[in-house]
Image 1 (cartoon, rainbow, N blue to C red):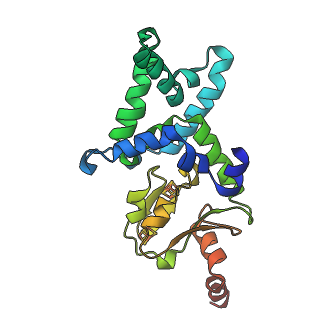
Image 2: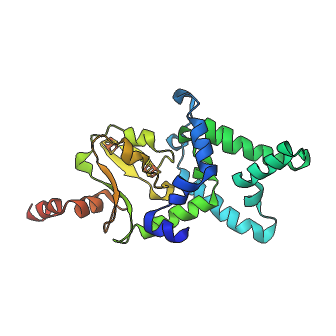
Image 3: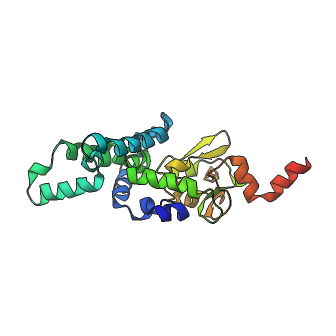
Length: 224
Ligand code: SF4
Ligand code: SF4
């Protein structure tokens, strides 16, 4: 999982993780105007990695809270409790996990990936590994061509992880939130976003990405 995150990005999160897909699909049932876009009033990255540090440290002092509040563990406890009639396993942590995973961070959150954005240690580690891998030329990553971008915001709206934001006429990218689902690429009407190898993608500064994708821009800069 870590090797694939390094080379092609966190594809496990975007393609294989049922716990991420279920709330994302559920969120499509909720009207857009009532959805919460957490990134509009907070920076989700420090919260995401703050939880990761907490999940890693807490087992040294007490039990593993990551398992108590894990969405996969929730499904197991729910099936044991409801389907097999063992209601004793459906405790407060199960109810809280279900509320956060499916309701607050799922149904009511833009993109339905609030649990992934805030609470999933597996996803945050993969995004961190991807941010390192994206610095090498042979790895796959998102790329952005600013001169093709019309600042229409389709990609910002499509991103379930709030990894994109519009700043003036440019789209800024936060690789530490990205799960390489490529919904931004699919939604872009001008093909300004692409996915592939390259020395530097969108993961670094806009200028670095521009020079990598368009050597002529660099050339013009030198002449000027
Ligand atoms: S930036 Fe694009 S690839 Fe990354 S999570 Fe958002 S939509 Fe998916
Ligand atoms: S969807 Fe494409 S053109 Fe529209 S803002 Fe995003 S990158 Fe730019």
